[in-house]
Image (cartoon, rainbow, N blue to C red; front, side):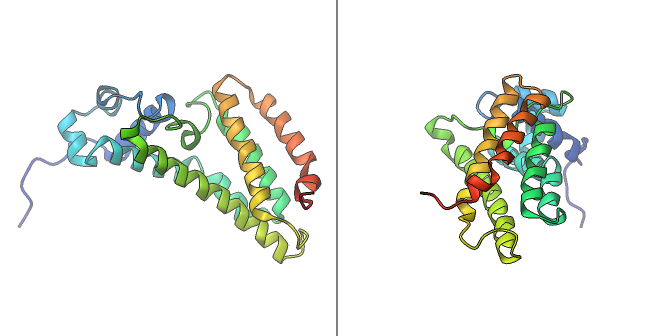
Length: 203
């Protein structure tokens, strides 16, 4: 028997993308339900019916961001033949993406919920989990470099990944503050010039 109720009269995928862009630009706490319904072109009852809550909508928006905006970086880890090349490709892609003026600057996963009130701690923690996942993805690629003999067996892959992930996060903030792609590429140049030093065992 067919379900009752009026069918949705909006494109859910398009509405989700618009919500993602609002969260990306304004951050979770600064984004009101009015901001979301206006951007998505729907009324509050439709939003709740389709997504459940603002927090669940945000979680879906973060997942969409990862699969769309993060796709090129994920490919770099699997397609670039060397670990060094993969790390540099990720940094260069971020320098390009973070400064694309056709969309919000910086990284949604870095910027959208850095500061939250205690009531929104689960949102803050959700993004922290995503950031840790990104660092682990880089560490996995570095471990593959060790296994393949490209990197020294003594390489602390988690520490190296933490270093370059910190560079990525800083680039996100710089982009939000107005840094250009050229500015960020200069940061990448210096980060990659330090490659051998970063790989060396800590004193």
